[in-house]
Length: 250
Image (cartoon, rainbow, N blue to C red; front, side, top):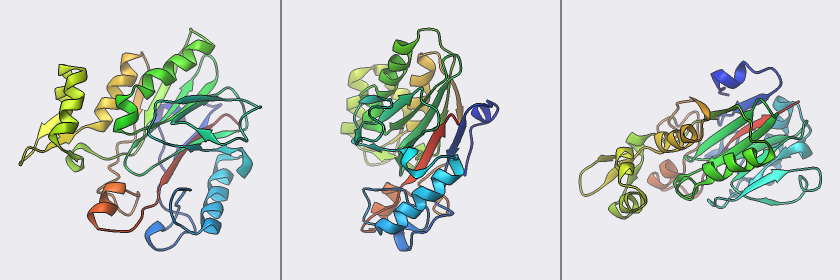
């Protein structure tokens, strides 16, 4: 379990970037797999959700997850929709006693808290969502509730630049949007590049006056701590688990 230094200091918000440890799953999914989209045993996934809910101090039905599609869709969670299937890649809420969760396996989980308005949020920021402005849309959704904000964010464990090899088409896509995006890439042999997802999402948060800190862990290289989609593919494994990151106002 990993925590933001900034959010840890704020009394009325609980959060956690969970590692893959402490759960009930076996084999490829050992042990705290929270990926409903994985082929893991349903009973074990449900036990893992119960474990996470208990740690967050909420009942399992108050642990709200999204059906994530690498989109830029943001949903505000309210009493009338929290029990429904949420198709989105970011959520915000003013509700107390619910825990918002995001699952990742290399993408960046971002946890947010607006101190002035008591709004919590979480973002699933893979390259695609970040490229499609999921961060900007989330911040705007918070500002729509109230324009006077003091927003803290923590970027959780995600794939590090040294582990994130991409091709030239990927690189050109980012350069087409803005030439200055070159700074997020390092050259590698054979026309390959290395992409800095963490810096890309962090700079996007800073652009909107968000106070950011990091849980700077590499999901790809730290196999004992994290699930990784890319590592699983490299090892030719049939499937992969997902880690969960959550935030709530008790």
